Amino acid sequence: MRSHYLYQTVFAQLRTLKGSVTVALSGGVDSIVLLHIVAECQLQLPELSIKALHVNHGLSEHAMIWQQFCQDTCQRLNVPFICQQVDVVRKNRQSLEAIAREQRYQAFATHTDPDSIILLGQHQDDQVETFFLHLKRGSGLAGLSAMAMETPFVDGRRLIRPFLHTSRNDIEAFCKQYSLQHIEDESNADIAFDRNFLRHQILPLLNQRFTGFDHCVARSAQLLSEQQQLIDEISASDYADVADGHELSINALLNLSDIRQRNVFRYWLNQYDFLMPSKALTEQVFSQLSSTKTDASLTIKLSHGLLRRYNQKLYLVRPEAELADQSLVTNQHNLADGRTLHWLQGQGIRAAFPHEVVSVQFANMKALIKPSNKPGRNTVKHWLKDVKVPSWQRDRVPLIFYNHELVQIVGYFISELHQSSEGGKWIIDDAKRN
Image 1 (spheres, rainbow, N blue to C red):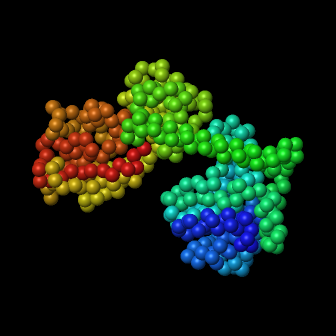
Image 2 (cartoon, rainbow, N blue to C red; image 1 turned 45 degrees about the vertical axis):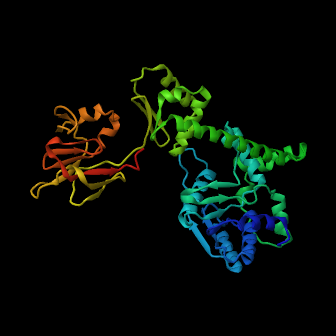
């Protein structure tokens, strides 16, 4: 086995990796070959920590048999085995394949450590099928690049596909040469699934007509991936010019060419894990940005929240937990939306007297305060509008009260009547903003 090029390909990658390695094990021929090679590699790399993860979707009547087969195989190879059983429930118009994939990735995150490696058995034929699936959806460069050899995952984890440049035929030949047992998922023959239709009906004809067609498609996907990397670098540079904190400056955005406007918009959405809206909706956004008055409102529903406009900036607004008024009895207080209030000693407001109840309130826009650095006494709404806090954020600004007296608008103002050089002020960890 060690002389085979597949073994040498995987070994060359494993010897450079740091951290634990998890093999995604379905029991099919590709993952079984990968598991056996990784187990053999460990004999030469004893410092390598490996395990296998099987996700049982329960979609086949043979699911428990496959699970037992994977467990037995791992036991023979002395590889620790983990199984996650999931229930695949179709949502809206999502395909079963998409839902099952989403649940597999959730299992990867649950059963692996941060900064670890997850090995997937996806190969060149999978790459070609993915290319065509994205092509039929009208995908751009990012989609037509199909799968990368290495993909960043959550919390420093990495997804690595050692067989991505290897054909299914070569993997099956390896399996036969070394008499490896594997399962056959009967659903792989069902051409009702788009991927199987391509695999059994379309791609064989193209490969028969055009010699090396699958290799050419895989090469094109690789070239497109390189082009996408170049675009990503340009996007990052443009984003640095138009970003204003978490937001986008509309004026700076509109100074770019049309194509770069849309590109950096897509990059910004991706930074905050929002899905790119349809082409029609994207054009609607830019049409409104270009043609409306600078103070015109804009609210558009996106995949995970809203796109909003205020003071010549674009904001991404997520649904957030309701915030309730509460007493503050310690110097640190966790809010329902994940933010934390801290009391910081020093210049600010005086400490509360023993008879005063300290509380945090929200959305009390009519409460009055005379800020230490502003003339006159006015409402919370007036002062937040004065410093250009977007209207939808104002209700989430913590207001600190001593009994019924407003003493601080956290992050913005302190009460002139209560200021002190030997007191302190409340500050907020706003890392979860946006």
